[in-house]
Length: 230
Figure 1 (cartoon, rainbow, N blue to C red):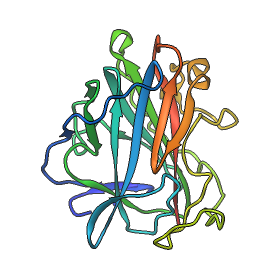
Figure 2: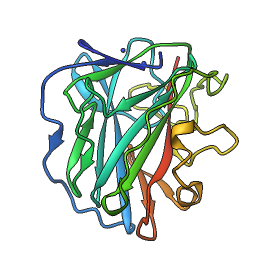
Figure 3: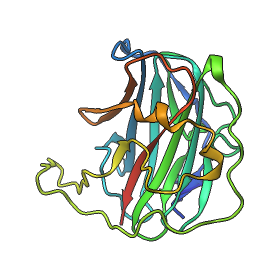
């Protein structure tokens, strides 16, 4: 996935533009002691629209995320692309350098008004979302310089049981979920306790991913967002 100046991801390419990263307050977030909401958006000819977390993207498609929590903290997003590259998507200069999150506010990722464009072999990019409550914040170490193998050789498949009014391809195995402990954790994430991450609850409310913790978080947590693309 790549970020660039017009709506790209070896995995994701970054596409930059200038706009506010912060949306206004929306409805109260009351479910779970600590709750995180993640919404995936796709840009088509008519503009940005919300899509199912399992939406299967095509090459050069543009996407972005909306993120909101009911607690203050700091956010990091790492990406293990289908080409084997492992990079930090956020924060960084071209996606936004301010990663402090305020409770009840909605943010764009990337936070610079740009977008990600899909690139690389078809499969599942593994995006690691790391959220640290304010009281226990410590900066996340930088990603390792070396690249590894692709996270999986699986290819997305359209789930015929999911009816899409617009004829969209959706893979129900994609989206937000607990970290797959059978896969080797990137070295800069090893400081995030796996036990806390296993206690997270994953729900889908309409087309929004909800990650919650029944008990107040005492430290950082990490979860995956499997991004499907052809």
